[in-house]
Image (cartoon, rainbow, N blue to C red; front, side):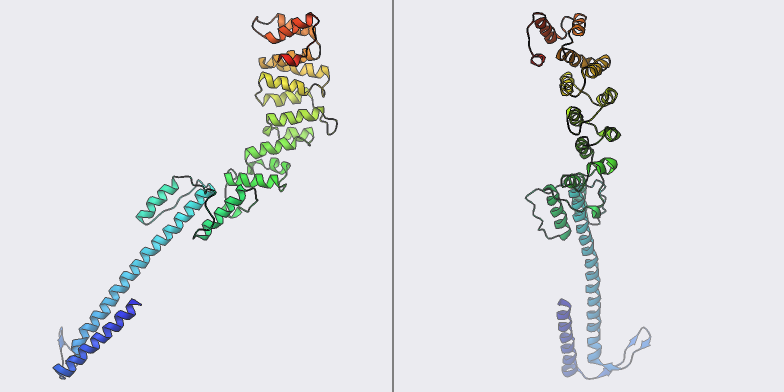
Length: 338
């Protein structure tokens, strides 16, 4: 629009100058020599307006050149702006491999800040910004946080990405993923989800399947297994060797071993229960209290007396007190002493 106005003004000015020279100065014609070249004879008015026309053309070239350079510079800013948006989106999505090269100094500074920061949209950030790509990502994140399942393949996120892990958990909670599928392809899922899936898996699965994925065994899952040992329906038959193998993969306290003994009090025969904790106590001193508890609970007094007599004076004081009461024919529940 400005070039049109400039062109109209220039044409009017050149026309007026030529008309003024022709009408009021001279109507004669002359020929000029230009570096040895004789130019044709033209009206003086035309020779006057010719430099003005040339000046106009040169100014147009100057304007077009700087306009072109300005367009290139603006494109750099626009491309850097898009890179900043992409970098923010990557940060929102939890990508760590964010590498963007900026061509403008200001965006280089902003890009460096974003690249070395972890950004995440708050609940107050509405998915109604001026950028459609940013809106889409914010909406996806809000849906995942609210428990919905979304499609994330287009963003090529890694399996250990937090949003991927949360989205997979949403799939599992909505029964779109089975526990066995998660465990069979555990490299695709977050370890915490695998452990939770395993805890549910052991509630219904046979022993061979439970042992197949026992690398995801947790204390919670183990106690679910013990519940099935005592169950009437969906009962699980398990040997001492299998249980010992599971115990060795976890770190139990003395109190937790006692809780395990309680959990096996109805599902195991007295002989199997005693043998289990006797074997464990030979390998780990922390199991000795659970072994004593098991013996007292099953009224096996003679082995306990031998163990307590051979112990240090400051060891197993609660069990020694209970043993003394038993000798006096006092009847108390052993659970009151632990």
